[in-house]
Length: 255
Ligand code: ADP
Ligand code: MG
Image (cartoon, rainbow, N blue to C red; front, top):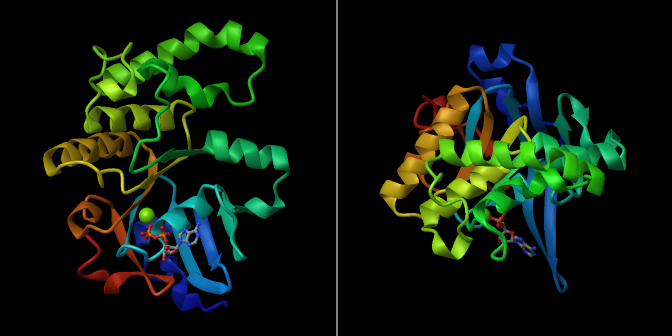
């Protein structure tokens, strides 16, 4: 499938078109097999995310939002099509580069936080920085890591919770920790899967304010949601429908 009409850039405002694409999905196809039944989820989805942009992917439950986000973050593989980062297909990267992409270039925020219950807030936050690090590197960099984790957490209003375990925190506090964890390696792109989906409206609004502040400092964000109001916080909204990404006609979904 190579229909240019599916490429979101075709209908993108000039500001986004002139900027280089940071992250892109091209003609992505993904099905799940359940026993003898194959469930097609993505049928040639395309998305182009410019540097510094905040894109919301709006879609109903089961439309494939999480699937698309997992493919963008290299947490799962497409059946066909490609994911490109800085104009390079992930498939062309070495295993090491790909691990680095997943761990360093991308930060992932999940709806249900996925914090480790045995670790305190600071340890949860710097955990991704330990991936691939030698014991020696850990000993030499431990203080700097802790400091960076504490600074991030303090910036998110959690300085009084540093020694706490996730179970002692509210949902909003847990999501702040999860966002700090996602940012610890200074990723190029933050992928957020319904980041406010488990929170009440007020707390969810505070999390969106926090994302907005990060975006204002230059963070590129791809956020998926089923909620039009939440999607409206982004620079640009595209819709995932029938396995493909639509631009929504540029009126109701674009600011
Ligand atoms: P969304 O995040 O938009 O709710 P998902 O990407 O989670 O949608 O799922 C899209 C479709 O794929 C759904 O019908 C879901 O049941 C199915 N699906 C998702 N993950 C799997 C899986 N690991 N195995 C089988 N089916 C799956
Ligand atoms: Mg989902």
